[in-house]
Image (cartoon, rainbow, N blue to C red; front, side, top):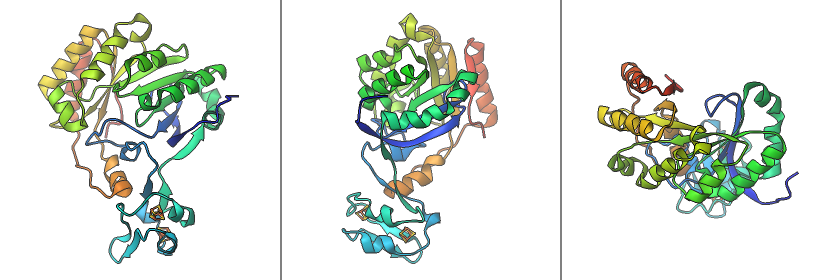
Length: 311
Ligand code: SF4
Ligand code: SF4
């Protein structure tokens, strides 16, 4: 048993994941990310702090939330239903406590390592039979490197392997320490756009640190083969011939061998509206024909390519 009582905000524990690394896995989504991708499919996990999220379809109109809110932040609009004034809300969560319909909920739950692993361990048999395990994801795990490090060590004691899922934007030494752990078998490493101008425009940060950290992992024989590059594919953002060619050439240069392509989907649009009231820009995924062209291009470079979540 882990002796730490420290807890962390966990957005969700997703069991039976089959697209977050090899085999059957449980994916742990931590809250907090230094990037702000315009297409983020988990926008409720960007802010490292607790937040209140709405599920308007669950609302039964009982009005308890309006009565209990100490800040008068909740009103009922005849057309829109329950409206939260985010400027007045201090996330006390009193409304969520009263909302039995779960139309108002906290985004995340504080959990200790023991609490997380006791749930994850329930599926240990599936991991063993499929070369699966745990995937630590986010948000961004490097924002919580110490906690994640302890969790990985405890998972090792309990006989479970771990896959890291990272955007690579974080402390290099912390990343290397996590990557070198014996029971870390795979690293899902995001490559959102090799072109720095595009990267900055759509994620809010430069890709320089991300590329430097990737080169560091690729240059070390102990971590190179753990790398699986993950690239979201968004029409007219990062699917141009130029970006795809430069990405492929870069992969060959640094020696990575496995690539996952993730065509855009719009799951984040309603989540963003429900968590902060803002509208997320809508994008499109490349056509089926274009996806196949990109897949074939990477295959011609002798890379092992998988397209995940194809529509
Ligand atoms: S407490 Fe929940 S179900 Fe009742 S009005 Fe508020 S949001 Fe709707
Ligand atoms: S979480 Fe926000 S909206 Fe809900 S009761 Fe507290 S202040 Fe009011």
